[in-house]
Image (tube, rainbow, N blue to C red; front, side, top):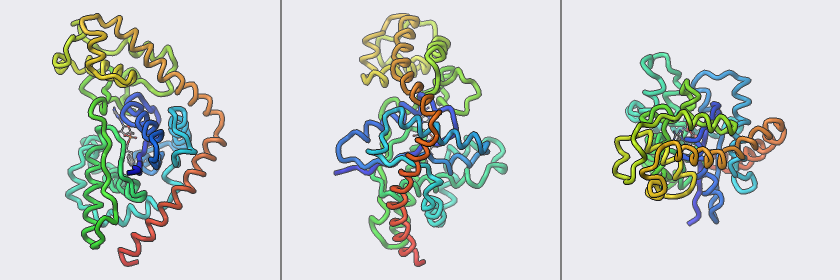
Length: 333
Ligand code: TYM
């Protein structure tokens, strides 16, 4: 079966190693599998659910697109565009907002985390954000959605919305119920400073993450300063559970070298951290520096990036507007 892939990344700056390992690296692998049809979206409408500086947002849309391309996405093989150029996303989001239930949204843990203590001051957009995400996915009849672990609940909501719409309007299988593609391992890369916290764009400490735009010496310095403990590296996979920082660094190494955690443990078990960190720095530099260099090069060519986004949006709109027409007919407009 040919898979229809959809995924999105918010252009909110500081794209990091978690985004790369949890999502973008897989986007590229899926794009390069035979017969897959891939749509990758820079989700700028999602970004404005929290306050953005308009000039910075514009740069971040381009930088996220540059990160896609620098990581190996190819606009000739995949549709690459930014969400706000395709009005169907907002239009369908309203309709599906009338299918989604308050109770479902009230359970979304990411809203609770992002809104923090002062829920009353959060934007309505932040609250209904998963409905827009469902619209993104369902508009393209997506069968598979590659994401990191933190998006699992939002994907379940997309599935619920599709099923309820199909049942409410008696149109079985009209909205395709998408499968999440979440890796069994390394789907949650943690902060370099605290192995119990997700690596995140919004962490105030830049030392907590490796940005895709970091220079070689910044990467080396961040890995040198990454939190570890005093024991040598474990020789057995079962012994890392109580050591989240160690598990995270071994996970990053395993993912970037495309080997299992056990392979990495076999390589480094019993050794001290200085040897391992040196090898890890070399590997991260080898994988991330070329991406960083490429992003920096593309920074000087807004025309090129804008042309790719516009071309992608035209292709996306063709698919999406057809689906919107069908949805409107079903609803009775
Ligand atoms: P966003 O922009 O927060 O993150 C983009 C992708 O990166 C993954 N990710 C991580 N993976 C592993 N470890 C981490 N520390 C880490 N941090 C982020 C995320 O899981 C995600 O896959 N709502 C989405 C964007 C979106 C979307 C969509 C995704 C909008 N519409 C439709 C899929 C399909 C978001 O905010 O991702």
